[in-house]
Length: 264
Image (cartoon, rainbow, N blue to C red; front, top):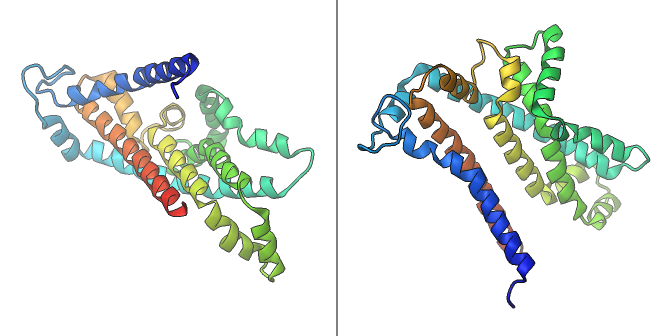
């Protein structure tokens, strides 16, 4: 069956939008292997000198480690809180449930610059500015909505008879959640964790507002590098950032595909 005209137009539009999103990022790859000491395309030959600079620079290595630590801890915290919130919304009923759900999803609807100003306003009196705790909490709050969405989607397909059977056999509610509900919704939890990690790994707007000197994440060092000089090491770091994100996305896609095949 041939696709309709509307289907072909939608497919073309999807590819155009995807190209617009991807092509600017791809520019970093050739620039990162230039032999020059400034940002340029490698017309006269490629070189890996800037990747060597990246791997031997204490500043870049420190920023990479800080970003990795913050992303792991904040995504774990967001996954825990977001999963509990999604299960709570799924089990409860009442007139305020949708209002609570909308409140939990609010960080996705608020522009990042507004969130950054709000975090700065509240973090200053709490002494959380330029601290790992402050950035981890901010990233976790921003990522919780993603976990709520993915886990809620998994719970929407959950067979309530499984919970009823577990409770009728004498299992307590915590045991039912741990041994019946969580294994079934694990793909949604993993998806939320991946999205939370990627958000923290790439986040820059809020980080610029609530960090100064002690915490210097990889995106922030990229930002400073682009403002203060034109060293192609910045492009090499951007390639590492992009590839790390792609590894998580592709790994999650392959894992989901394998689980789907096993379930079939």
